[in-house]
Length: 284
Length: 284
Image (cartoon, rainbow over all chains, first blue to last red; front, side):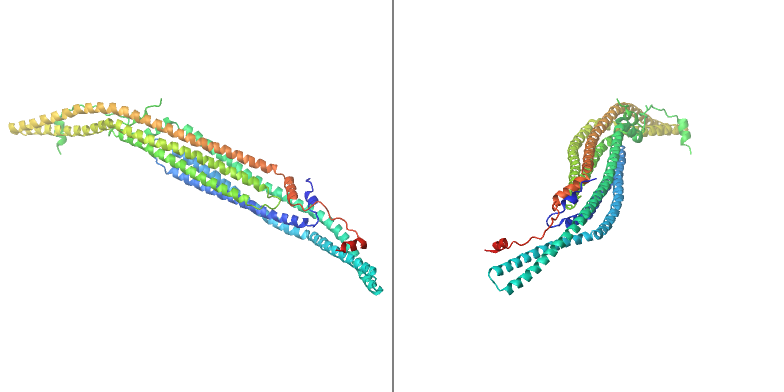
C-alpha cells in the first residue's frame, strides 16, 4: 500500500489540485505514446544495423576466392549473417511489443474517458466551492459596507427615514452573507469528500499506469538482453572458428585445390632409333 | 613445424607450380586489402549505429517533462547515451586497428617485391627446363626422321652419294639430340633444386601471412568482445535503474513538484461587522 500522496498534497488555497491531477492523468497518454516512439525508433535503428550487417556478409562472400586466406572469409560471412539475424530477431520482438503497447494506448484512452465522466461531479464540486468562496467574499464585503453606511448615517445624525432605509439594506446584506456562509459549509463538505475520493482515484490510475509502463519496459529489456546473449554466442563461435582454422589446414587446402602434381620431372635418356619399328610406324 | 605441402604438391608435367605459388603469394595482398575493407565497413556500421543512438538519446531527452512517468526518461536518456559511447569506442579501436593493418599492407608489398627478385633465378630455371624439354622433343623427332630417311634410301638402293649425304644429316641430328639430353639433365637438376627451395620459401611466406592475418583478426575480435561486455554492463545498469525507480517514488516526486498544498479548505464562520474598526479602517 503506497502512501496517499495525492490525497495529501493537492488541496491548497485555490482548490486547483483537481485540475493538476486531471492533467497529470492525461499526460499519461503522452508518456505511453512517447514510449512507443522510443521502442519504434530503437527497432528502426536495429533494422538498419541488421541490413548493414547483411550487406557486409554479402561483401565478404564476394571477397577473392583465391589465395591461402580465402577459406577464412566463409567464417566471416557466416558469423556476420548470424549477427544480422540476431538484430533482425530483436526487430521482430520489438514490433510485437509495439503492437501490445498500441493496445494499451487504446485501453488507456478509453479508461481516461470513463474516468472523466466519473469525476465530473468532483469537477462540479470544485467549481461550486470556487464560485461560492468568491460570492461569500463579495457578500461579506457588501454586508460590511452596508453596516458601516448605516452606522455612519446614525452618527452623522441623518433622518430616521434614511437610517431605516440603510438598515433594510444592511439586513438584506446580512442575510445574503449568512446564506453564503451556509452554502459554503455545504460546498466545502461536498468538495472535501469528493476531492478525497478523486485524489485517491487519480493516484490509483497513476500507480497502474506506471506499473503498466514498467511492464512494457521489462519486456523491452528482456528482448534486448536475449539479443545481447545471442550476439555473445555468435561472437564466441566466430573466435572459436578462427582459432580452429589452423595455418596448416589452410596451407594444406590450398595445396589440394591448386596443386600441380606430386611428380618431379623424370630423367630423359637418349633413345636409339629402331628403324624397323619407325619405318613400320611410318607406313600408311 | 608444418608439413612441406608446397614442396610436395607443386611439381607436375608442365612444371607450372612456380607460377601458381607466385600468384598465390600475390593474392595475399588482396586478402589483406579485403580484411581492411571488412574492418572499415564494420567501423562505418558501428559509427552509424552510435550516431542513431545519440539521436535517440536526444529524442528521449526532449520527451514530455510532465506527468508521473517523466523522470524515467532520464534513465532512458543516460543509458542510450552510454550505449552510443560503447559503439563509438569500438569505432575508435577499429580505426586504430586499420592504421596497423595499413602498415602491414605496405610491409607486405615491399616483402613481395623483394621475394620476386630472390626467386628470379627459379623462374629462369623453370623457363629453361620448359624450353629445353620442347627442344629435346623436337630434336628427338628430327633424329628419328633423319635416321629413318637414311635407312629408306639404303633399302631402296639409292646411290651411295645420296645414302652418305643422308648419313651426315642423321649424324648431325644424333649429336643435337644427344646434346639436348645432356642439357636437359643439367636443367632438370637445376630446376629441381631451385624449385624445392622456392616452394618452401613460398610456404613460409604464406604461413607468416596467415599468422599475421590471424593476429589482426584476434585484435578485431578482442575489441568487439570488450564492447560487447561494456554494452552488457550498460544494459544491466539500465534494468537496475528501472527496477529502482519505484511507483511510490514517482508518485511522491510528482506530488512534491506539482502539489497545490496540504491545507484543506478551512471553515468560514459568519463574522459580525465591528463598525468601530470598519469605520476606522475606512478612514484615510
